[in-house]
Structures are given as C-alpha cells and as structure tokens.
Length: 102
Image (cartoon, rainbow, N blue to C red; front, side):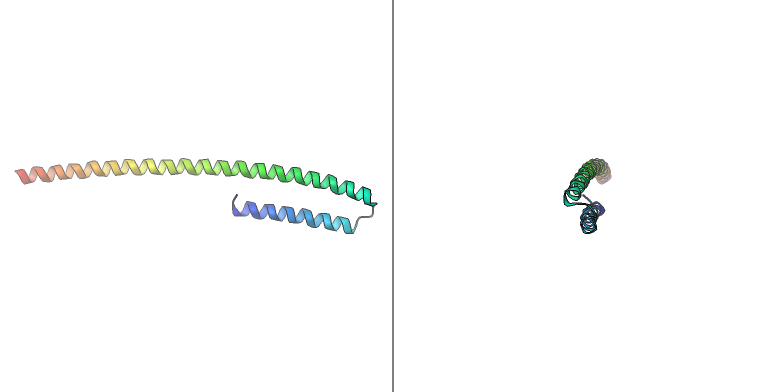
C-alpha cells in the first residue's frame, strides 16, 4: 500500500472514531437506541473499510503486475542491446585480425 493510501485509511478510521465519540457525548436518545445506532454505523464503517481494503489490494496488484511487465521489458531490451554490442565487437575483432594478416 502506498503512503497516501495508508494516510487515507488512518484518517478515515480516526474520523470514524472521532465521529462516534462526539455522537455519544451529544446523544439525546436512550442508551439502547444509541447502542443500536452505533452498532449500525460501525457495521457500515466496517463494510466501507473492507471495500476500501479490497480496492487498495486490487490497485496494488495492478501496479505490481505493471511494474513487473516494465521490468521484464527493460531486461529484454538490455539483453538485445548487449547481444548487438557483442556481435559488433566480434565483427571489429575479425576486421582487425584480417587487417593484421594482410
């Protein structure tokens, strides 16, 4: 998970906790009604957090596979360039050998 994703998640959870605390302090209803509301809100927060975690995992997998593909492309390109340089060096050595034998 990248830094901004972690910060968002921490901020989201902190906001949910602060909201619940304020709601408890200013609740005009009875304890059982307040507990029911808190239970409902915590359930919806839990669902939202689970959705967020799932989305962040999917994004992580997407970035990981993109990075792997780009890395593979770089390695393939580097191998091709190295092979080309070796062939060029071998050709130069052959030319040098031919010029020495003349």
